[in-house]
Image 1: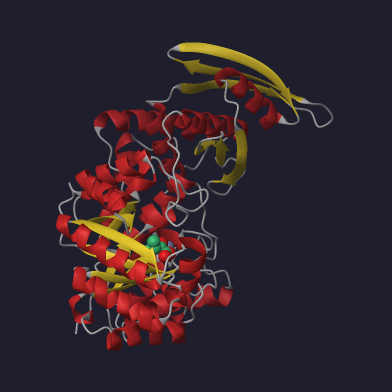
Image 2 (image 1 turned 180 degrees about the vertical axis):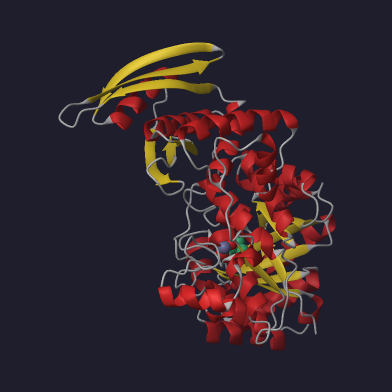
Length: 510
Ligand code: KIV
Ligand code: ZN
């Protein structure tokens, strides 16, 4: 019996598709490199036909990221599959992942097709993809609300056409563990050629059951699980990679399967994703939440000190959380700074290190303790600064509780400093009006959020914004001990990204 479960990571496709999680090419590439360090088996890098941006991102990841299989998603038609192949073909191990819905509700209301038509299109799509690559995955969208006998027929047909992985998505997060386990068993027993393909599952979390459903599927024969870092994804998200992997790791006595995941890379991957998307996990999130290993009750702390396993079923170190976080400050030298960056998984070359070290010293002058989160945030900020069109230089804000606020902002464009002053309902409003005036941005601020990166009143505030014009949506983030400065930096980053972004379609919607 095969005891290894393949981890198919769809953070960059299903995860990225969810509101507030879109990433640009550089961000996707950084995340893909992190996923390869995590040692996932398959990276689903995107949906190439959805937009030029998605296409470029999949193509770049296929070319640059070594290790995992690189998959692209395509609907079950020639145009999507051809485009998908163009994007993934440079990968050492490319996969085409093609899908079509199989439930009557989708056939009638979305596709307006008969069961026979869908069966034919599925077989055609897989056979077409197979001309390009031996590694073809087929997904029956909304499988859990499909007629079982029909679903079995579809899988039998696509395996006969060359599918090497058949995926059973719980697209709308509707199934429950007993039912899903029985469905996987049913498919194993009723698809005659099932042994020629790997059974995969792809669960959404609408009822909070995505991880439980994925695990029960493994117990019943699934050998690939599709999941995302931090469980990001459409609506309530996808099954969380870290929860699946650590359950298999901690409870191998009951679920005797392993994965290839380097578990100590889980926390760095989670942090990087949060940092890139601004999508924070809740503090009590299993494995990667801030409180996941925090023992508040005295009796628990006492127990842990006496014997760790009294209250801990896994160690923080096993998922990459250093038990003792090292704190740097203004007396820390370049060597300590570089060492810390290495531990955090961001080795920099000498030029990058010089720039980041200078930013670190500036920060340490303003803030007594510099934590890992501060370091990660300043490295990220430095990286983008080098190619920004608009660069924040300074701001001066006058804000009184009984009056309108006023803000003067200096922004650099092509080496030239520009200056504007505006009034606003509050300091952020005034600064944003001044920036709009300088950059001629006429779109909308969709979302604005601020978090303290660490504790303490001298903490850096990290501001996340989402902006849109009538074609595109972009995000920006900025971190500073002055949240008005962080707000200005975040807004300018989002505006700079407007220039790079392209609009996209969503896979299920077209
Ligand atoms: O949820 C779903 O059905 C999907 C498929 C495209 C695999 O994401
Ligand atoms: Zn999905």
